[in-house]
Length: 266
Image (cartoon, rainbow, N blue to C red):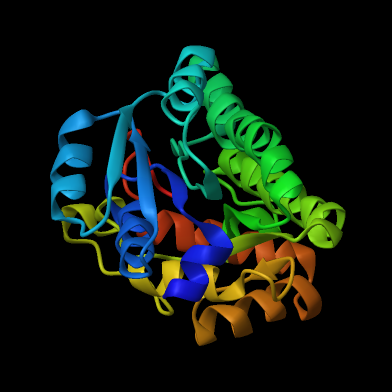
């Protein structure tokens, strides 16, 4: 634990920390002795989580889809040595693209694409100067091919994965580790809402966090879950593209919650 904190501490920023994967990252990092800056829109879950963790914490209730929200995070960490950033906050409304509100599409771009870029640009230079640190960008199996009914969200997750992979190459000589965590179905509150049955290969949030943290320094991409690693390899390498898209459409219809705002989902 001390070695991890020395490599990626003393502070980590976890975006989208109010529940699900973000909360799992917070608990996993606290278990490794890393102090935490917890970021999400809702202050109450952040406060409850911070009080339950055995490390120093700072909570920032901010909307990372906005310039003001990002500025609030940067201001809160101005005097802290941030050694790890987890870009996990995301927005994933579902439905036909042609029926989507323009505001929803803009939020996908601002939060899912813009926020990781801004977080990386702000925190990576000082990490490189110290020659240690890390960045995890949460992506999704939805971004490996077109995902009907999540079309814009899937495109944003493809953006995040490619962003992380490019940064992995650029930063690897600086002592800073970057990885994209490509998660499939995760048993977050959003996925299990309404008593829905999780699809095969669903993993727990703590398994996602553990895989992503273990993947730092080992390569540009990690896929949590043995079944998901097999299925993503099959869909991206062996299955015809049309078949992969059709499969994602069927899976989305069967498992996706209604199009509510999922702050902190991957």
